[in-house]
Length: 287
Ligand code: 13P
Image (cartoon, rainbow, N blue to C red; front, side):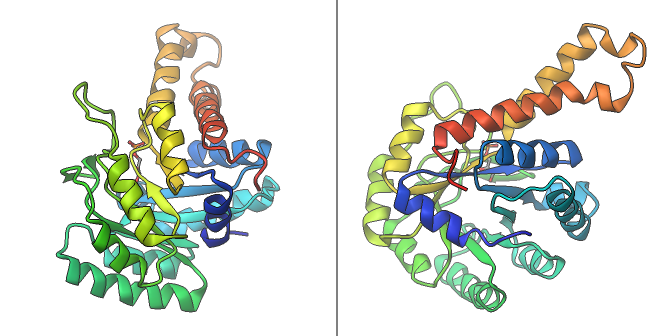
């Protein structure tokens, strides 16, 4: 059964490790993430962007797929199904479809409007026992056509949003989605430290997990990050393994064109990536 992300993230924050959010794109992705979580006895969060939601045939389709897999694959570790970077309407749609967690990304609104919309959604999620993530300071890079500047959040604004009763808070600290450019300045630990001092026990969320060096990930966790989002890295691993299979001509040998064979190397590559991240984040055996 799907669970809210609240308990797993509060435990992670107290235990100084982080739970991975791995974005899903299809059945293979979802199965790979769930099986890896089970094999490593780790809690996990499945992330779904609005674009991925459309791609997979809608939020209800995803809820049906995930619930079916949890039951039929005997997944017993805590799993949250979470909307990533949701609009207000997208969050409402996911709440109604059966997601156990939503993110409302109001970071592009003025702070007053971000507060007003986040407040409404916090109330609805509280009533239904769902977790809710809010965001202050947009994350750089491009996601589903939305390009953020990668600004650093204002710690006071973070406190204002945290005080609304959100479950977890994403704050921009110079992180960006996708690959990091050569001239990236790195995470702003000064900003992160100031945010954690003001927000106390609030689990903080680090977006753009792909390509952040291991020492920065560990330092971010030591400063209160309890959820780390990874998307592009699984996509790169999947694409790379699939390309190798095709380039080796394996799809032309025997029944190598069968999707169950063609997609197998990519599936295994996602599993390896997720396992590596769970080990780095410290969530193995924390289910
Ligand atoms: P990456 O694609 O950079 O891993 O970022 C994922 C993310 O933050 C999803 O919200």
